[in-house]
Amino acid sequence: MKTFPSSETPDFGPGPSWRDIPPAEKRQSAVALPLFKDGGDTRILCLERARGLSRHPGEVGFPGGAREAADRGPVQTCLREMYEELGIPDSSVKVMGLLPRECTFSSDFVIFPVICILETDFRADMIRFDPGEVRIVIDVGLSDLAAAPEMKWGWYGDRSFMYPSFPVGNGHVIWGASARILWRLLRLMRQGLLWPC
Image 1 (cartoon, helix red, strand yellow):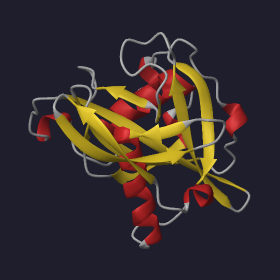
Image 2: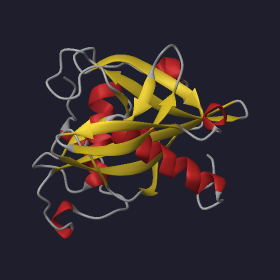
Image 3: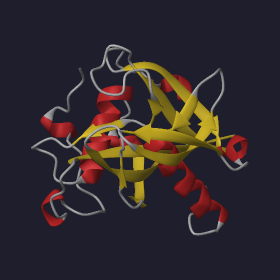
């Protein structure tokens, strides 16, 4: 597993400190929403989690993970995790801000999504991912996600709920909390409240 040498620990940057966020019953985590330009298209990086992981194995989502004691806030958590999983250093990332938190139904996490813009010369083939955490990296054009997501019914215990689902190519699907985060990002972009990179 990659870890930040002390000289590479990212600056806190924008966003709240974990100590300023009220404690929740669920574990706190953060994910990066890494956007980059490829020609005229804005694309977003997703990943399929390694199938040997104890939590959410094989699911498609965004780089990120649980808060660690040394993390000062959601921004640092997501930047550390993106480096550990994909090898993208914080020096290549511009943090744009946070979306509202999202809770998972099937596990004990509350997720803080962080919008990140990758450097202008970034290409998906520059990624060096950790195979212990990531099975495959997927980059998808936001123009390919222009249609509304498919809505599906799920069950958690004795409760039913509806969730969005986005196909992202080659049989991969983003669903659940990751899909709700992506849907919110796309709505903000379409409303002109968040500009494409």
